[in-house]
Image 1 (cartoon, rainbow, N blue to C red):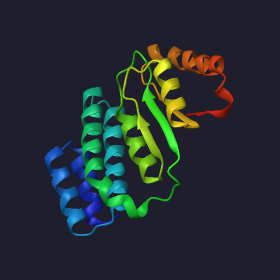
Image 2: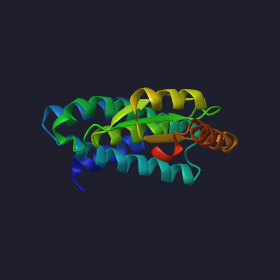
Image 3: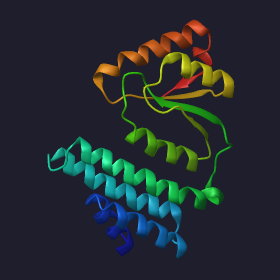
Image 4: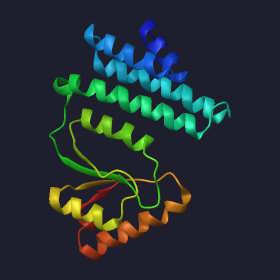
Length: 175
Protein backbone atom coordinates (compact mmCIF):
# COMPACT_ATOMS: atom_id res chain seq x y z
CA UNK A 1 0.00 0.00 0.00
CA UNK A 2 1.40 3.39 -1.00
CA UNK A 3 2.14 6.07 1.57
CA UNK A 4 -0.65 8.18 0.09
CA UNK A 5 -3.10 5.32 0.47
CA UNK A 6 -1.99 4.74 4.06
CA UNK A 7 -2.61 8.42 4.76
CA UNK A 8 -6.10 8.29 3.20
CA UNK A 9 -6.83 5.19 5.27
CA UNK A 10 -5.64 6.85 8.47
CA UNK A 11 -7.47 10.12 7.87
CA UNK A 12 -10.82 8.60 6.94
CA UNK A 13 -10.43 5.95 9.63
CA UNK A 14 -9.92 8.81 12.06
CA UNK A 15 -12.95 10.72 10.73
CA UNK A 16 -10.83 13.71 9.67
CA UNK A 17 -13.29 15.27 7.22
CA UNK A 18 -11.43 18.43 6.20
CA UNK A 19 -8.11 16.62 5.83
CA UNK A 20 -9.63 13.86 3.72
CA UNK A 21 -11.32 16.31 1.38
CA UNK A 22 -8.19 18.46 1.05
CA UNK A 23 -6.15 15.37 0.27
CA UNK A 24 -8.66 14.19 -2.34
CA UNK A 25 -8.56 17.59 -4.05
CA UNK A 26 -4.77 17.73 -3.92
CA UNK A 27 -4.37 14.19 -5.20
CA UNK A 28 -6.71 14.84 -8.10
CA UNK A 29 -4.83 18.03 -9.01
CA UNK A 30 -1.58 16.05 -8.97
CA UNK A 31 -3.08 13.53 -11.36
CA UNK A 32 -3.36 10.65 -8.90
CA UNK A 33 -5.73 8.06 -10.45
CA UNK A 34 -9.30 8.60 -9.20
CA UNK A 35 -9.97 4.86 -8.92
CA UNK A 36 -6.94 4.47 -6.65
CA UNK A 37 -8.25 7.27 -4.43
CA UNK A 38 -11.55 5.42 -4.14
CA UNK A 39 -9.67 2.22 -3.29
CA UNK A 40 -7.72 4.03 -0.58
CA UNK A 41 -10.87 5.59 0.85
CA UNK A 42 -12.48 2.17 0.89
CA UNK A 43 -9.61 0.99 3.08
CA UNK A 44 -10.43 3.90 5.40
CA UNK A 45 -14.05 2.79 5.55
CA UNK A 46 -12.81 -0.67 6.53
CA UNK A 47 -11.01 0.93 9.49
CA UNK A 48 -14.23 2.68 10.48
CA UNK A 49 -16.14 -0.62 10.22
CA UNK A 50 -13.57 -2.40 12.36
CA UNK A 51 -13.68 0.33 15.00
CA UNK A 52 -17.48 0.03 14.99
CA UNK A 53 -17.25 -3.75 15.47
CA UNK A 54 -14.86 -3.19 18.36
CA UNK A 55 -17.37 -0.73 19.87
CA UNK A 56 -14.88 2.13 19.60
CA UNK A 57 -17.17 3.87 17.08
CA UNK A 58 -20.94 4.23 17.14
CA UNK A 59 -23.65 4.40 14.46
CA UNK A 60 -23.24 8.17 14.32
CA UNK A 61 -19.55 7.66 13.47
CA UNK A 62 -20.51 5.27 10.66
CA UNK A 63 -22.91 7.84 9.30
CA UNK A 64 -20.29 10.59 9.55
CA UNK A 65 -17.73 8.43 7.73
CA UNK A 66 -20.32 7.76 5.05
CA UNK A 67 -20.92 11.49 4.67
CA UNK A 68 -17.17 12.10 4.31
CA UNK A 69 -17.06 9.34 1.71
CA UNK A 70 -20.02 10.87 -0.14
CA UNK A 71 -18.34 14.28 -0.24
CA UNK A 72 -15.08 12.74 -1.42
CA UNK A 73 -16.95 10.77 -4.09
CA UNK A 74 -18.58 13.97 -5.35
CA UNK A 75 -15.12 15.50 -5.77
CA UNK A 76 -13.81 12.41 -7.56
CA UNK A 77 -16.75 11.72 -9.86
CA UNK A 78 -15.99 14.40 -12.50
CA UNK A 79 -12.55 12.83 -12.96
CA UNK A 80 -13.99 9.40 -13.75
CA UNK A 81 -15.57 10.13 -17.12
CA UNK A 82 -12.79 8.42 -19.03
CA UNK A 83 -12.80 5.42 -16.72
CA UNK A 84 -16.44 4.46 -17.05
CA UNK A 85 -16.89 1.11 -18.71
CA UNK A 86 -20.64 0.48 -18.82
CA UNK A 87 -23.25 1.25 -21.40
CA UNK A 88 -25.26 3.77 -19.37
CA UNK A 89 -28.01 1.31 -18.51
CA UNK A 90 -30.58 2.93 -16.20
CA UNK A 91 -30.87 1.68 -12.65
CA UNK A 92 -33.29 2.79 -9.92
CA UNK A 93 -32.20 2.74 -6.29
CA UNK A 94 -33.51 4.00 -2.97
CA UNK A 95 -33.90 3.29 0.72
CA UNK A 96 -37.24 1.64 1.43
CA UNK A 97 -40.09 3.29 3.35
CA UNK A 98 -39.62 3.69 7.10
CA UNK A 99 -35.81 3.73 6.80
CA UNK A 100 -33.63 6.81 6.58
CA UNK A 101 -30.18 5.24 6.32
CA UNK A 102 -28.27 5.85 3.12
CA UNK A 103 -24.54 5.52 3.80
CA UNK A 104 -24.15 2.15 2.08
CA UNK A 105 -26.55 3.14 -0.69
CA UNK A 106 -24.58 6.28 -1.45
CA UNK A 107 -21.28 4.43 -1.62
CA UNK A 108 -22.85 1.86 -3.94
CA UNK A 109 -24.23 4.64 -6.14
CA UNK A 110 -20.74 6.02 -6.64
CA UNK A 111 -19.46 2.58 -7.65
CA UNK A 112 -22.41 2.03 -9.98
CA UNK A 113 -21.80 5.37 -11.67
CA UNK A 114 -18.14 4.46 -12.10
CA UNK A 115 -19.28 1.22 -13.71
CA UNK A 116 -21.26 3.29 -16.18
CA UNK A 117 -24.83 2.94 -14.94
CA UNK A 118 -27.30 5.80 -15.24
CA UNK A 119 -28.33 5.87 -11.58
CA UNK A 120 -31.69 7.27 -10.49
CA UNK A 121 -31.43 7.76 -6.72
CA UNK A 122 -34.82 8.14 -5.07
CA UNK A 123 -33.37 8.95 -1.65
CA UNK A 124 -34.73 7.58 1.62
CA UNK A 125 -38.14 6.55 2.96
CA UNK A 126 -39.31 5.58 -0.54
CA UNK A 127 -42.69 3.86 -0.98
CA UNK A 128 -43.42 1.16 -3.55
CA UNK A 129 -45.44 3.40 -5.86
CA UNK A 130 -42.47 5.75 -6.24
CA UNK A 131 -40.14 2.88 -7.13
CA UNK A 132 -42.61 1.55 -9.70
CA UNK A 133 -43.25 4.97 -11.21
CA UNK A 134 -39.52 5.59 -11.68
CA UNK A 135 -38.95 2.11 -13.14
CA UNK A 136 -41.69 2.76 -15.68
CA UNK A 137 -40.47 6.28 -16.50
CA UNK A 138 -36.85 5.22 -17.05
CA UNK A 139 -37.34 1.73 -18.47
CA UNK A 140 -34.81 0.52 -15.90
CA UNK A 141 -34.48 -3.24 -15.54
CA UNK A 142 -32.49 -3.07 -12.30
CA UNK A 143 -33.87 -2.00 -8.92
CA UNK A 144 -31.72 -1.48 -5.83
CA UNK A 145 -33.46 -1.58 -2.46
CA UNK A 146 -31.60 -0.38 0.61
CA UNK A 147 -32.76 -1.31 4.09
CA UNK A 148 -30.70 -1.11 7.26
CA UNK A 149 -33.39 -1.30 9.91
CA UNK A 150 -34.94 -4.71 10.50
CA UNK A 151 -38.26 -2.93 11.03
CA UNK A 152 -38.17 -1.71 7.42
CA UNK A 153 -37.42 -5.10 5.88
CA UNK A 154 -41.12 -5.97 5.35
CA UNK A 155 -41.17 -3.05 2.91
CA UNK A 156 -39.02 -5.12 0.55
CA UNK A 157 -41.76 -7.74 0.26
CA UNK A 158 -44.32 -4.96 -0.22
CA UNK A 159 -42.26 -3.63 -3.14
CA UNK A 160 -41.78 -7.09 -4.67
CA UNK A 161 -45.52 -7.76 -4.38
CA UNK A 162 -46.26 -4.40 -6.03
CA UNK A 163 -43.89 -5.24 -8.91
CA UNK A 164 -45.68 -8.55 -9.34
CA UNK A 165 -49.12 -6.92 -9.24
CA UNK A 166 -48.01 -4.35 -11.84
CA UNK A 167 -46.79 -7.21 -14.06
CA UNK A 168 -43.16 -6.06 -14.26
CA UNK A 169 -41.46 -8.30 -11.71
CA UNK A 170 -40.20 -10.72 -14.36
CA UNK A 171 -38.31 -7.97 -16.24
CA UNK A 172 -36.75 -6.28 -13.19
CA UNK A 173 -33.69 -7.62 -11.39
CA UNK A 174 -33.79 -6.65 -7.72
CA UNK A 175 -30.75 -6.18 -5.53
